[in-house]
Image (cartoon, rainbow, N blue to C red; front, side, top):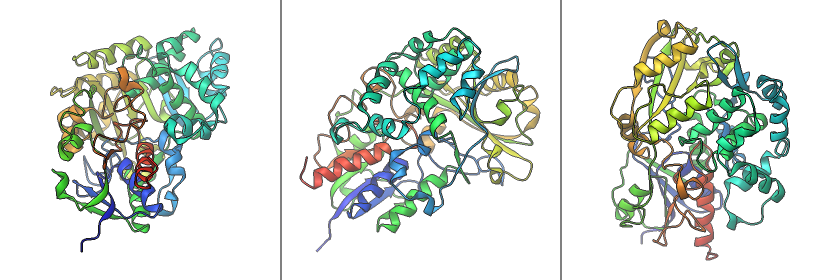
Length: 472
């Protein structure tokens, strides 16, 4: 007689692995099936350019991972995960060599914004500092899990964060504060007048002050490997190199959990047009560099920051975002850049560095943004081009080929707009369940969305557990 597995997970990205780990530690039998040769999804580390240069093809910096309630519940440090923190989590430089900084300290961040805006920033952050654990749990979970741990803090956060970041910026008079907030909100690749982008900026800022913006020692693969290590220690099984095309290709199970795009899940599980209204967002154009030395930033703060945002005004950031969302490649892209070898020299040969930069382009765009990206880099780091030993360029088609969840190069696995800004993949009390009683979604297409934090996986696992226990 064939033994039925409790849960089968399709996709071994951070959310799929977290869902599997959460269910396995609750005593369930779990098997994971991954199409690629290794686990990781958006958290991998590979030699993309030259031998000895270890790059993160997608996510490299992990503010939400370091502050994740899901990861905090798992002993990932026992399986090799170690966070490395730069002196400054993020710098937002200006062409004159000055910078706004998102520092570990609220006070240092405030002072970088200028005398007029410093007290305004302190007042903005005051209700939330020291309350990360409760706020992250309440904000990143779902209402049916129970009463909020910090209802007053959550209510105040909602009042401030639910409007667009462009409204939040009205609290400030100087361009530095407005640009800093715009860059933080731009991580969700949506115009600055989009509702709830204020919450995105607040979450990223608070994460820096409470948990930092670290990288994983050895590369982002360490996050995935630690999750896989814990899962297998609990008896879970992982199968790699297995492409799943139909549900009946998988072992019999009481539940199937998909760390995939909603459209891929619908195709595999036979859900028809259940997610036909789900919308994917703008694409990404990313360049990984092997460098002969550190990036020659004009800004001293940028030389010490793990992440550097390039877009000197909120207006320039918004123009770039609107172009990408509206179907045009931006002439002057807003760039998010990462320099992990500042704190992890093991990623490159001695004295050398890895560095990446990405901008936003239309979904599915097939053009080449390299020249525009490097003009923007030279604007803030003259002589950058002289340091380039090799580059690996990936536009939307290459990103989608590398990771099937990045439909059209959308690394967020779903547009941050309309209902999807707050209800992913759609308006539902339990966003992880589907019309098929045994099929669940756990990817970043579901709440709380993109980022290497595992919360979509943990939340989905709890929904599965309640269902299998007959309590939902």
